[in-house]
Length: 249
Image (tube, rainbow, N blue to C red; front, side):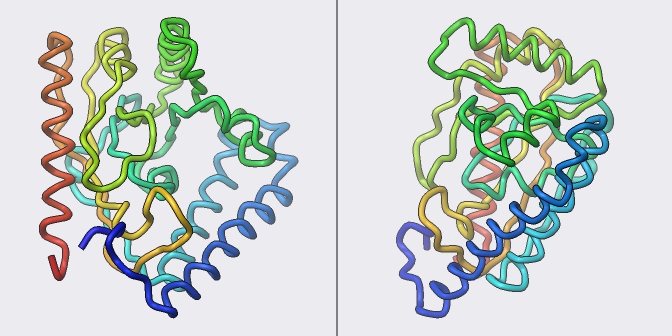
Protein backbone atom coordinates (compact mmCIF):
# COMPACT_ATOMS: atom_id res chain seq x y z
CA UNK A 1 0.00 0.00 0.00
CA UNK A 2 1.31 3.45 -0.90
CA UNK A 3 2.32 5.75 1.96
CA UNK A 4 -0.27 8.22 0.68
CA UNK A 5 -3.03 5.63 1.25
CA UNK A 6 -1.84 4.24 4.59
CA UNK A 7 -3.67 5.40 7.67
CA UNK A 8 -1.17 5.98 10.49
CA UNK A 9 -1.89 4.38 13.83
CA UNK A 10 -1.66 6.50 17.02
CA UNK A 11 1.70 4.83 17.75
CA UNK A 12 3.07 5.78 14.32
CA UNK A 13 1.91 9.37 14.85
CA UNK A 14 3.62 9.48 18.25
CA UNK A 15 6.83 8.03 16.88
CA UNK A 16 6.75 10.42 13.93
CA UNK A 17 6.43 13.40 16.27
CA UNK A 18 9.32 12.13 18.37
CA UNK A 19 11.44 11.65 15.26
CA UNK A 20 10.63 15.15 13.98
CA UNK A 21 11.92 16.55 17.26
CA UNK A 22 15.02 14.35 16.93
CA UNK A 23 15.74 15.64 13.41
CA UNK A 24 15.64 19.30 14.38
CA UNK A 25 17.50 18.65 17.62
CA UNK A 26 20.27 16.82 15.77
CA UNK A 27 20.57 19.59 13.19
CA UNK A 28 20.68 22.31 15.84
CA UNK A 29 23.13 20.62 18.21
CA UNK A 30 25.51 19.34 15.54
CA UNK A 31 25.24 22.59 13.59
CA UNK A 32 26.11 24.76 16.58
CA UNK A 33 28.77 22.54 18.13
CA UNK A 34 30.67 22.19 14.86
CA UNK A 35 30.16 25.77 13.72
CA UNK A 36 33.92 26.49 13.90
CA UNK A 37 34.54 23.87 11.19
CA UNK A 38 32.98 26.27 8.69
CA UNK A 39 36.22 28.23 8.92
CA UNK A 40 38.25 25.19 7.89
CA UNK A 41 38.60 23.12 4.70
CA UNK A 42 35.55 21.43 3.23
CA UNK A 43 36.86 17.97 4.15
CA UNK A 44 36.64 19.03 7.80
CA UNK A 45 33.02 20.16 7.34
CA UNK A 46 32.24 16.67 6.06
CA UNK A 47 32.72 15.38 9.64
CA UNK A 48 29.60 17.05 11.12
CA UNK A 49 27.68 16.30 7.91
CA UNK A 50 28.35 12.58 8.30
CA UNK A 51 27.61 12.73 12.02
CA UNK A 52 24.26 14.41 11.33
CA UNK A 53 23.42 11.76 8.72
CA UNK A 54 24.32 9.00 11.19
CA UNK A 55 22.11 10.53 13.87
CA UNK A 56 19.18 10.76 11.47
CA UNK A 57 19.65 7.13 10.40
CA UNK A 58 19.91 6.03 14.03
CA UNK A 59 16.75 7.93 14.91
CA UNK A 60 14.88 6.38 12.02
CA UNK A 61 15.86 2.89 13.14
CA UNK A 62 15.28 3.29 16.87
CA UNK A 63 12.35 5.71 16.97
CA UNK A 64 10.42 4.91 13.77
CA UNK A 65 11.53 1.36 12.97
CA UNK A 66 13.07 2.04 9.54
CA UNK A 67 15.91 -0.12 8.30
CA UNK A 68 18.13 1.12 5.48
CA UNK A 69 19.83 -1.20 3.02
CA UNK A 70 22.27 -0.25 0.27
CA UNK A 71 22.42 -2.62 -2.70
CA UNK A 72 24.31 -2.82 -5.96
CA UNK A 73 27.63 -1.93 -4.37
CA UNK A 74 29.40 -3.51 -7.34
CA UNK A 75 28.15 -0.53 -9.35
CA UNK A 76 29.11 2.10 -6.78
CA UNK A 77 31.49 4.61 -8.39
CA UNK A 78 34.91 5.25 -6.93
CA UNK A 79 36.37 8.73 -7.28
CA UNK A 80 34.83 11.51 -9.36
CA UNK A 81 31.41 10.51 -10.63
CA UNK A 82 27.97 11.61 -11.77
CA UNK A 83 25.09 9.96 -9.92
CA UNK A 84 21.43 10.39 -10.92
CA UNK A 85 19.07 9.32 -8.15
CA UNK A 86 15.35 8.90 -7.64
CA UNK A 87 14.06 11.50 -5.17
CA UNK A 88 11.08 10.61 -2.98
CA UNK A 89 11.89 12.27 0.35
CA UNK A 90 14.44 13.96 2.58
CA UNK A 91 16.08 10.64 3.36
CA UNK A 92 17.57 10.79 -0.14
CA UNK A 93 19.91 13.59 0.97
CA UNK A 94 20.86 11.77 4.17
CA UNK A 95 21.79 8.23 3.11
CA UNK A 96 24.32 9.23 0.39
CA UNK A 97 26.71 10.21 3.20
CA UNK A 98 26.84 6.47 3.95
CA UNK A 99 26.96 5.49 0.27
CA UNK A 100 29.88 7.44 -1.23
CA UNK A 101 32.95 9.20 0.17
CA UNK A 102 32.50 12.79 -1.01
CA UNK A 103 28.85 13.43 -1.97
CA UNK A 104 27.99 16.76 -3.55
CA UNK A 105 24.32 17.49 -4.19
CA UNK A 106 22.69 19.62 -6.84
CA UNK A 107 20.03 21.47 -4.85
CA UNK A 108 17.61 24.36 -5.19
CA UNK A 109 19.09 27.74 -4.38
CA UNK A 110 16.60 28.45 -1.61
CA UNK A 111 18.19 25.79 0.62
CA UNK A 112 21.50 27.65 0.69
CA UNK A 113 19.76 30.58 2.42
CA UNK A 114 18.55 28.50 5.38
CA UNK A 115 20.27 29.07 8.74
CA UNK A 116 22.73 26.34 9.73
CA UNK A 117 21.66 23.83 7.08
CA UNK A 118 22.34 26.27 4.26
CA UNK A 119 25.63 27.44 5.78
CA UNK A 120 26.94 23.89 5.83
CA UNK A 121 25.66 23.18 2.32
CA UNK A 122 27.52 26.21 1.00
CA UNK A 123 30.74 25.31 2.79
CA UNK A 124 30.50 21.72 1.57
CA UNK A 125 30.48 22.97 -2.01
CA UNK A 126 26.95 21.88 -2.86
CA UNK A 127 25.74 23.14 -6.25
CA UNK A 128 22.80 25.56 -5.92
CA UNK A 129 20.49 26.02 -8.88
CA UNK A 130 18.05 28.86 -9.46
CA UNK A 131 15.28 26.95 -11.19
CA UNK A 132 13.73 30.16 -12.49
CA UNK A 133 16.89 31.24 -14.34
CA UNK A 134 16.47 29.04 -17.43
CA UNK A 135 19.61 28.59 -19.55
CA UNK A 136 21.65 30.60 -17.05
CA UNK A 137 20.84 27.98 -14.42
CA UNK A 138 22.10 25.22 -16.69
CA UNK A 139 25.39 27.06 -17.26
CA UNK A 140 25.79 27.56 -13.53
CA UNK A 141 25.00 23.90 -12.91
CA UNK A 142 27.63 22.73 -15.42
CA UNK A 143 30.23 25.15 -14.04
CA UNK A 144 29.67 23.98 -10.46
CA UNK A 145 29.69 20.31 -11.40
CA UNK A 146 32.90 20.69 -13.37
CA UNK A 147 34.61 22.15 -10.29
CA UNK A 148 33.39 19.38 -8.00
CA UNK A 149 34.35 16.66 -10.49
CA UNK A 150 37.85 18.15 -10.68
CA UNK A 151 38.05 17.75 -6.90
CA UNK A 152 37.19 14.06 -7.16
CA UNK A 153 33.68 14.47 -5.73
CA UNK A 154 30.59 12.38 -6.46
CA UNK A 155 28.03 14.81 -7.90
CA UNK A 156 24.48 13.68 -7.11
CA UNK A 157 21.60 15.10 -9.12
CA UNK A 158 17.92 14.29 -8.80
CA UNK A 159 16.78 14.24 -12.45
CA UNK A 160 13.20 15.21 -11.61
CA UNK A 161 14.42 18.25 -9.71
CA UNK A 162 12.21 17.77 -6.66
CA UNK A 163 10.68 15.10 -4.46
CA UNK A 164 8.10 12.95 -6.22
CA UNK A 165 5.28 11.05 -4.56
CA UNK A 166 5.13 7.33 -5.22
CA UNK A 167 3.01 6.73 -8.30
CA UNK A 168 3.61 10.19 -9.78
CA UNK A 169 4.40 10.27 -13.49
CA UNK A 170 8.15 10.63 -14.20
CA UNK A 171 9.20 14.19 -14.97
CA UNK A 172 12.89 14.22 -15.90
CA UNK A 173 14.41 17.67 -16.38
CA UNK A 174 17.20 18.75 -18.81
CA UNK A 175 19.79 19.40 -16.10
CA UNK A 176 20.99 15.80 -15.95
CA UNK A 177 21.34 15.68 -19.75
CA UNK A 178 23.45 18.85 -19.66
CA UNK A 179 25.79 17.34 -17.09
CA UNK A 180 26.03 14.08 -19.01
CA UNK A 181 26.97 15.90 -22.20
CA UNK A 182 29.38 18.42 -20.71
CA UNK A 183 31.16 16.12 -18.26
CA UNK A 184 31.48 13.38 -20.90
CA UNK A 185 31.47 10.61 -18.33
CA UNK A 186 29.20 7.72 -17.34
CA UNK A 187 26.18 8.32 -15.11
CA UNK A 188 25.34 5.90 -12.32
CA UNK A 189 21.58 5.65 -11.66
CA UNK A 190 20.25 5.02 -8.15
CA UNK A 191 16.79 3.62 -7.43
CA UNK A 192 14.93 3.81 -4.13
CA UNK A 193 11.63 3.20 -2.37
CA UNK A 194 12.33 5.78 0.35
CA UNK A 195 8.96 7.47 -0.11
CA UNK A 196 7.25 4.44 1.40
CA UNK A 197 8.71 5.25 4.82
CA UNK A 198 9.56 8.96 4.47
CA UNK A 199 6.92 10.51 2.16
CA UNK A 200 7.70 13.81 0.39
CA UNK A 201 5.03 15.69 2.38
CA UNK A 202 3.85 15.66 5.96
CA UNK A 203 5.62 14.54 9.12
CA UNK A 204 4.39 10.94 9.30
CA UNK A 205 7.16 8.34 8.99
CA UNK A 206 6.32 4.67 8.55
CA UNK A 207 8.35 1.67 9.73
CA UNK A 208 9.78 -0.64 7.09
CA UNK A 209 12.74 -1.31 4.84
CA UNK A 210 14.20 1.45 2.67
CA UNK A 211 16.50 0.34 -0.13
CA UNK A 212 18.93 2.45 -2.12
CA UNK A 213 20.24 0.53 -5.12
CA UNK A 214 23.14 1.45 -7.37
CA UNK A 215 22.35 0.40 -10.94
CA UNK A 216 24.70 -0.35 -13.86
CA UNK A 217 26.23 2.91 -15.13
CA UNK A 218 25.04 4.40 -18.39
CA UNK A 219 28.12 4.83 -20.61
CA UNK A 220 29.16 8.22 -21.93
CA UNK A 221 28.69 9.25 -25.55
CA UNK A 222 25.01 8.51 -26.09
CA UNK A 223 22.74 10.93 -27.88
CA UNK A 224 20.60 13.01 -25.57
CA UNK A 225 17.32 11.21 -26.34
CA UNK A 226 18.91 7.79 -25.94
CA UNK A 227 20.55 8.78 -22.67
CA UNK A 228 17.37 10.22 -21.17
CA UNK A 229 15.35 7.18 -22.21
CA UNK A 230 17.93 4.81 -20.73
CA UNK A 231 18.18 6.78 -17.48
CA UNK A 232 14.44 7.04 -16.93
CA UNK A 233 13.87 3.39 -17.79
CA UNK A 234 16.65 2.23 -15.47
CA UNK A 235 15.61 4.30 -12.45
CA UNK A 236 11.85 3.93 -12.80
CA UNK A 237 11.84 0.18 -13.41
CA UNK A 238 14.22 -0.52 -10.55
CA UNK A 239 12.34 1.78 -8.15
CA UNK A 240 9.04 0.14 -9.10
CA UNK A 241 10.59 -3.28 -8.51
CA UNK A 242 11.65 -2.26 -5.00
CA UNK A 243 8.06 -1.30 -4.25
CA UNK A 244 6.64 -4.46 -5.80
CA UNK A 245 8.89 -6.77 -3.76
CA UNK A 246 8.57 -5.11 -0.38
CA UNK A 247 7.17 -7.31 2.40
CA UNK A 248 3.39 -7.40 2.32
CA UNK A 249 3.11 -6.05 -1.22
